[in-house]
Amino acid sequence: MSAPAAVRSARRRREAAPTTRFDTALGWTRAGAAVTALRWVLVALVVLVFAVPFLTVVLGAFDASPDATRFTLLPSDLTLQNFVVAGERGVYGFLAHSLVILGGGLLLQVAISVLTAYGLARFRFRGQGVVLVLFLLTMMLPEEVIAVPLSLVIGDLPVLGTNLRGTVFGVILPVAMWGFSILIMTEFMRDIPKEIEEAARLDGVGELRMLLLVILPLCRPALGVVTIFGFMMIWDQYLLPLIAADDPSDYTLTVALSLLRSDPQVGSGVLLAGALLALVPSLVVYLLMQRSLVTGITSGATKG
Amino acid sequence: MTLTSPAGGGPARTSARRRAAVVPALPPARVVRGPSRPRLQRALVPWLFLVPGLAFAAVFKLWPMLQGFRLSVLEVQPFLGDLFVGLDNYRAVLSDPRFVDALGHTVLLGVGTALGGLVVGTALALLLEGSSPVLAVTRTAVFLPVVTAVAVVGEIWRIIYFPTSTGLLNSVLGWVGIPAQQFLGDPQTALWWVVVVGVWTAAPYDMVIILAGLAGIDRSLYEAASVDGASVWQRLRHIVIPGLRASISVVLTLAAIRSLRTFTEVYVLTGGGPAGATEVWMTRVYSLGFRSNDLGLASAASVLLLVVTLVLTLAVRWATARRSAA
Image 1 (tube, rainbow over the protein chains, first blue to last red):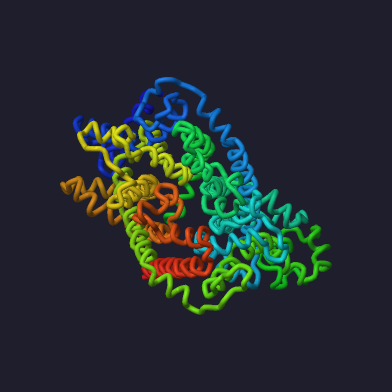
Image 2 (image 1 turned 30 degrees about the horizontal axis):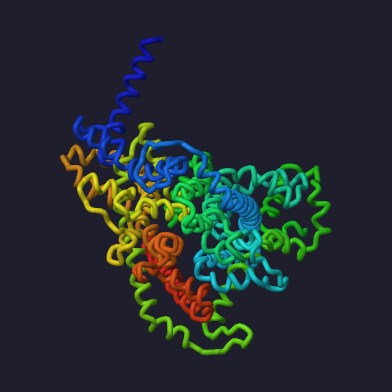
């Protein structure tokens, strides 16, 4: 019993050796102590440059000193005062506004991309190529480029004549159709083998139930990618809430940060409190969905 | 039999054939309903799924785009009626020195950010490649700038760049004996400080792409090179860089093209100032369209940006398609 195990582990060690020697392009594991030490110094420096700015936001938001632009890693006095003052400036209203737009926009965006992808990936029909090119075209069309006419459309919706300006729908509806998420869903659904549908077809399942009960449960990886990219896309909107607003009280939180910054009566601690509130949703979503994010980026990269 | 008609498409045909082979005795519900569903009705089914997406695309993308083309040849006068001015708006944009300056800034910012992001991102990837948990946590932390909303990044950096000697970056510079900088307040250097912020957010994104590329390189090549006595530099030059080129070149070019429409970073960091030193194409469009309400001029500038973006994007895609076909 013990002998074969020893042989096995020895063999495993032999097999593992070549790969661990070069588990990285630079061959860090083969390097001497001095190089390894240098590496960890560099890693610490990288963390300092890329992560410490976020730490200063957190610390500055809880810092009692009015001059939070100073470089302090240990706040002199911890306080919630900045959040109270930020609340008086309506920050929680802006946050609620942002969250409503996020929830509504993301729900609509995912629903539309799932429906459209099902239509494009699971059927063959005349005009399919044209529709696909059309969605590709909307992807290549930068949102910024249509900002001016879009603001007119938001003010006076074609056919309906409704004015969306100053409402959450002025931001939710324009982000509802996103070519990127449609394409991701379509490519994923196309790879699901047809045979999976057949058993359900024999049972006489309709198209809508086919989508919801058979196809969608198989699309979880794609749904993850679409959700986190949709979140980042909607939370990142700046120009759109700016042009869809009737007055500053309609801003989303990220846009409203500029109000806190230019308010002469509040210090940067209050601005940082607002920035922290805008940061928390991103952090939560990122830490929960990191894998989907990396999948999305790398699959986009290999497809070019 | 209607099930095998072309309108039914692939799945119906296969299922029909399979049914005939496997369960000929048990006619499923589909056969009963099949003939009662006219061909036209079945052809409509995919379109029902496409209607929401198409409707939103039409109202919020295509219609505004067409409106943009229309506005770009008009002098828009509220209450007075619009005036057709032909290509005058385009001529005005191209001869406006502020737009010419903005174009230069936009290209500099785009190319600087793309190249800087690539160099720093590659360095990050090479440094942070590996399976140790500490490295995994570091990679997670380094990626934070990418997931943060650009406006929040801008506000953070405004505070980092605070131009007094007690400002965050100035204190750090003070430790190594560099005098306090004006950063975004200095027209000479402001654009470069904007580029730094761009690199800070682009580099971690590029890092993830490059890490994926590195993972795809055959480890035995490193081994062979090491047996042949190749130095680290030679290994990078002859194995790593050729192995990465395909995956990163397209992404990078597309990133550079995308950065032509940079707006939020500049708007939050400097608003185009000081004295127009960081004005980019879109901040100029914004102030024309939404501050001075010159919708015709702003639309003409937008259309120019759209045309440039489309031409460059299609050129890159065409070039890659041709290269991969060759």
